[in-house]
Each structure stands twice: as C-alpha cells, then as structure tokens.
Image (cartoon, rainbow, N blue to C red; front, side, top):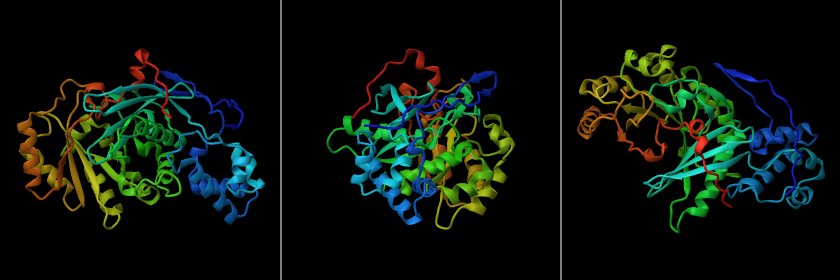
Amino acid sequence: MSSASARETPEPDVRVGRVLVSRKAHAGPLLADHDAASLAELLVRAGGTVTAARSAAARVLRYLFRDGGDGQVAWDGAALAGLGIGAWAHAPLLALDVTRSLSVAEVVPAGDATLRLALRARDGAFLESVLIPGPARTTLCVSSQVGCARACAFCETGRLGLTRQLSAGEIIDQVRIALALWRASSGEGAPPLSNLVFMGMGEPFDNLGEVSRAIRLLTDGRAFGFAQSRVTVSTVGVADKIETFFQTTPAELAVSLNAPDDGRRSSIMPINGRFPIATLREALLRSLPPGRRVLFEYVLFDGYNDAPEDADLLATQVAGIRCRVNVIPCNPGPDPRLRPPSAERLDAFVARLSGQGVTTLVRRPRGRDVGGACGQLAGLLRQQASTSFSEPG
C-alpha cells in the first residue's frame, strides 16, 4: 500500500493546568477525518464538479469502510482508476492517509468477556475503548478526548484533566480496530458489533464538531452503516450545545444526571454550576425532536442519592420529557466516600421510580475487574506497565 509521505507540521504546545503537552501532526491528513460531504467538498476545491466529487467520495467510502476498514486495501492510482475515479481526483485523494492513526498498546480481558483496549495515537497519547459482548449485541464504548476537563467526582478520567481532543479519524479508528479485533476473536454465532456508545474518555460535547463528523461517517450506509438508533452520545449536561447536537449528529442522546437536586449534583458534577437542572430541562424540552427520547443516566451512590424521596424528586425532574432513566450502581472511583448501594436499596429505588411511571432500566457494571467499567477509564495512568499486543487482521 502506498500513501502520502510523512510530513511534520509543528503545532503550538498546549498548556493544560501545569502540564505542557506537545502535539505532533499526523503523517498526513487522515481520510477518516472526512465524512462524505467534507470529502466531496475537498474534491470540488481540487477542480471537480459537484456531481463528480460526490460520486468519487461515495466510491472511496465504500471501498475503504464498507467492511469496517481494516486498512489492508491498495491505495494508489491504479486502485482509484479501478473504482472508476478520474485522474483529476487522484492527487487530492492520495494525499490523504488511509492507514490507522491508532495502534493497540494493551488488550485486557475481564472476567465477563469485556475487553479493555488501550490505544496509542501517533503523538504518543493514550486513550481507551471498551468492547462489551452481549447475548444479543456487541457494544463498543468510544472515547472522544484524551482525558477530560469536567472533573466529575466519581470519574477516574476526570482526574487526568484534558490533554487534547481526538480527531474524527481517531474516533473512527477506535471502531476500525474494535471491528477487526472482534471479527478475529469472536466465535461463530457471536453477535456482531452493532452498538456504539460515546461514554468513554472525555466529554463528547466539548469536541462536538469532530464527534458529529465521525458519527456521520459511521452511520453512512456507504461506509460503516451503523444504525443511527444504535449510536448514543453521552454528555454531562452541556445544555447550550444540545440543540446543535440534534441538528448535526445522527445519534441518540444520553444525559448524565446523577442527583435529583442542584446542591448534590453540583458537589459531584462541576458542570451543574453553569447549567443547573432547570436549565438542562428547558434545553431538552425545547430541542428534543418529536418522537425522540433522551436517556438519563443516574449513577447510584449509597446513602447519597438513593433514598425513596430521591426517587420521587428524580421523577419530578424528568416529568414531561420523553425519556428512560438508566440506573447505574457506581463503580470504584477516585472518591472512596462514593460507594455502590446494597442490592436492597438499588431494588427499592428502581421500584419507587418505576412506580411513578418513569421507564427505568438497571445497567449492570461490565468490565469492572479490569478498570473498564463506567467511570473507571484512566489509561494514561496505567501505561507504565502496559504490554504490547499485535493488531488483529
């Protein structure tokens, strides 16, 4: 396979807190940084007509990504000619890098068959994804940033601070790697990787442009073809971006609520100081498209937000919003005071909430024993002891 020659374009250093992070450019612009529209726009700028550019973009996406994009295809003039793409488009297309921007640094299987994937970017940054097999479907938990700036008290990633954003191509490459790994390791009859949840490292709304572009490619039937209803983006509640999300992103929305009032929510989620629950409610009521619903994630902490009256107050907060509440027993995190409730308190909370007409689902922890469960991803702190693994396929 041939590709654009490597070139280093210095970028400004990014200062995050007291840590100075140096970033390097990719070996070349990533083709996976483009969705169909932006790739066609690039080809129009190269001199193609709108019709020809759209046709060439569609053929390239089918060729590279229809089967998951394992990176093993030819990428040269002969390959493009074989796709029926005219010579006018060869130079701008071949200037794009079609190889993966991430490599596998570590794969750790959990006792429940969940796989935690530590991935290394070309600038040396580490991020994590989690592959979650199930009886009827397989889900990939995707990261949108290296680290996170939101500093929720129960989240290990928040302790890292924000290192940098992930590009759309780096988001796409988490999926490409997971698809290849799952195909190579899953047995006959195993459910295919069909669901994506943006609940990994980072706050997706803080990188919404790249997240949206990646999802447009992931849900494009000419490329990966994931169903829009099977892609979910979770936010801590960045209320002023909810309307933009629904306008630009073909995916479902999940909102991390985690407390039934502003006082307690602010103490564990700093975002609530800027966007309190009433503001979040108003944004959802105003922006939620007809026929759509939002998922509220409610992490349950023993003696903190799990009392019967907390269920009553939560029911009031979500009233009037077409929704489902996912109740999640907390996982071990950075604050030892935040512990999971007993099974009895969990069941009582769910029964009380359901009894008030709120559609409720308990989300059981997966991958907890390898640090791959909700709130546990903090790969940058674990890489000193990482073991290298070869990429599948």
